[in-house]
Image (cartoon, rainbow, N blue to C red; front, side):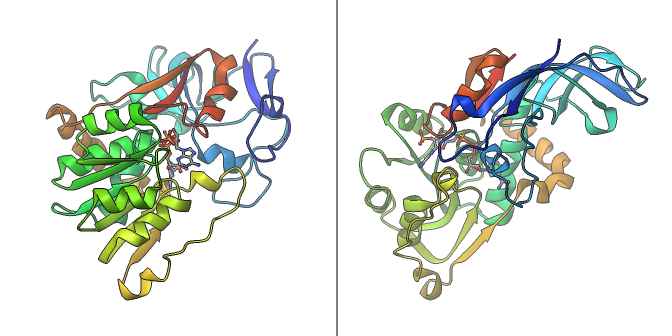
Length: 328
Ligand code: NDP
């Protein structure tokens, strides 16, 4: 019988195993225009934590007791749609489960970029688009800029580092621990701040003696404050995520916020879906960078559907280098 993870209780603070439960349901017959997909790779993403709270946001909350959703890659195993025959490799949003039945209109064939299937959940998928458009469009980063990016060893952050280098920028990344920092350096970062070894502000001021022009924020909190401190005149901040507060909801005081005024900073939040209609542009440019050998990627893989909660919770304790995935 198909199995799916549901939310049993809304997490208070850091999620725990008892907040999740597996539900089994009889295999659904296919309706008109529908396909059945055997999922092979499932994504866990920090934004899912927001969907576990019963609050109004840009995506509706997960309903208690019902299968959760998220990015998934799999193969069509039954089809009522001539254009999407059995064997087609696809991407869709009915993750957190081993089998999905949904209208083919809600399913995307994997682009033909010669990459591994699971790359379309990471660097060549939603996190990659977030990095690409957040850096180049929201922050307006350009050659010659000095860019600071937090959570630089994660899916989005590691892609920001590499796009920025490919486009002629100086890049400073921050990550937790020496091993992750070494990896970020190996991606081409000019300097790396280990925020677990000392304060982000001290580390950034030492790494960027001439200040920063762009901050790509994945973390919020002390990283955002450090970026305000180091910001040059007219610096641009793309506020992508604030994982530091996803579990406790408590934003810390920003000591250097008033810098926004004198330095004429531009601070802009964004959601990747703002750029979905520009996917072709993203694939074309990323394809060129891949062909030029400018993109590397790493994945942290948990095995089996049962491992979904562990993989998800690991995002908040730094359990991943590169994209966090579950192989079904
Ligand atoms: P990552 O692969 O970066 O995984 C999360 C990483 O965040 C962890 O590995 C950990 O790395 C770091 N982290 C966790 N807690 C903290 C903390 N308290 N302080 C500092 N670092 C922490 O995830 P993604 O690449 O998928 O997402 C990165 C960010 O981008 C998230 O904030 C996410 O919500 C956001 N996002 C926003 C989108 C949008 O449309 N705006 C779309 C996609 C993602 P370390 O070991 O280095 O601490």
